[in-house]
Image 1: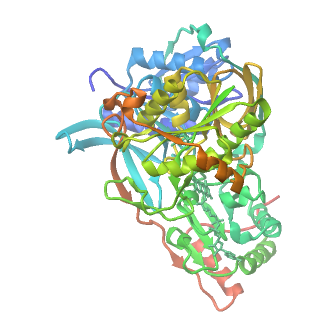
Image 2: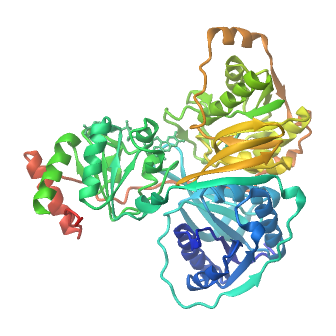
Image 3: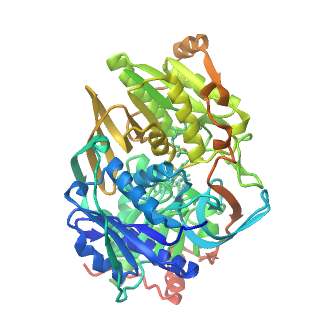
Length: 338
Length: 267
Ligand SMILES: Cc1cc2nc3c(=O)[nH]c(=O)nc-3n(C[C@H](O)[C@H](O)[C@H](O)COP(=O)(O)OP(=O)(O)OC[C@H]3O[C@@H](n4cnc5c(N)ncnc54)[C@H](O)[C@@H]3O)c2cc1C
Ligand SMILES: Nc1ncnc2c1ncn2[C@@H]1O[C@H](COP(=O)(O)O)[C@@H](O)[C@H]1O
């Protein structure tokens, strides 16, 4: 598509730190930019954020569009949409990537709709290549492959945006590894902030975060709690296992829906993505909705008493047994060793 | 006050859904239901009706049988139901869908509040709400867990990573409602009886003045290139043993062979 060039990443940051999910996406964006032979740029909006520029350069940004202004202190849909769409319209990147977070999933669709372009949500992988449009008998190059889990089993779909630019996608946190740092140049481009009255419709009254949120995403070992845990006693047992192993506890949706664990523990399509060295799934059937959240685990152990449970198709080590027999024995052995 | 609720009919997520060769979902086989969190949006609207005597209109785009979803909305207590049903919208992505819904809402005239579900269980994009708000040129709040209408604005509690955010937003506004927001009321027998008398109005693209080239597959910027099964790359090794002791020992040994040593962490 004529005139559109470059891969952009929208930068999320919190308390003066760039979020891991942004760094993860930058690693992938760098790779895509190299394949396409174009620049990778980042977009940084906020107040008092200019010190983050060096980090972005170290993680591979060729260019950093910086809008540092008191009016951008808090994320608000309309002013941020205005600023970002104008920036995209004047600089014409071919690809813009967002984190699939509460911010990215609020901002990206708004921007995509204003630009009347496509958007693919919750990607689990990205690549570039050609697209054969059989209907129109056309072959298009430099197309972004936006890979998403599809409904109904172990299926993924590749979505493309062949005739509109930019191609926009949101990417699940935890999808890619954080790249290694290297000294980088990173040219800073200051963006003028001209906010309009008509965009002033919302006021942020309060922001509250409990700070332990990243424990699960960063854990080396995650113990997964499924419906097979049967209730609070089972959860307690698995919590103990996670503690003994120095890992974190995660859960399936029915478990958090039932309130056995808070919603922050949910892993999967509607919850978190984890990438531990070891995932121990206890009493989990292995629904696709859950498994997309653990597909980056290095090793998966599944304990399920049903030999037909789908999780056994998606695990490395399979134990067909009652978890209430296996887990206490495991704890006993660990206690002895420790 | 006028409240519009967007309701999507989806294949029952609790049932198995087949995927066609062309990558679209085979919706014919599965039982069709109202998308989960759209029921929470309906519940929120009906609570406003009780509190402020608001008028509540449910709007859906879908095949003719999506009328069932709207009938259910009527039975829950909404005042009016509009179905945009037209063969030409088949295959619409979120942008094309939002465009159609936008044209229908414009036809309905002024409103104060638009409530969507947070995301649909089949699309699962959470995009239609914000894209529709953009077409309408109104503010939005997504991931809404709770809200209160006060005069000409709403106070919204929206979920963010590890916590929540409280916003004050001027109406008219579009909110996407999470399934944690409330507990949707069941349909009652008397509700169903009352609903029988209310019509579901069906509109075509001409009725809402939508441009044909902006809808359906042709009007959708995104295309499905391919759908493939991902074969499991996992080892799938069964750990056996004569008793629990032996199974656990075998597990620890197998993990160790792969460089994972399970041991009690130092506290
Ligand atoms: C739109 C949508 C989004 C969703 N998003 C998510 C999501 O993000 N995350 C998520 O997890 N789910 C999600 N789900 C739900 C998902 O489809 C499954 O329903 C859910 O993951 C199943 O949880 P489970 O494995 O704990 O329960 P079940 O499917 O009920 O499985 C319980 C398993 O425990 C085994 N078991 C029982 N007792 C024992 C015992 N004593 N010892 C050993 N094994 C035992 C049983 O054999 C069974 O296999 C979503 C669903 C929809 C429709
Ligand atoms: N075809 C449709 N008709 C009416 N409302 C819809 C339709 N598609 C999506 N929506 C609304 O938009 C929300 C988000 O859908 P989605 O973007 O598909 O995740 C849903 O919960 C509905 O409230």
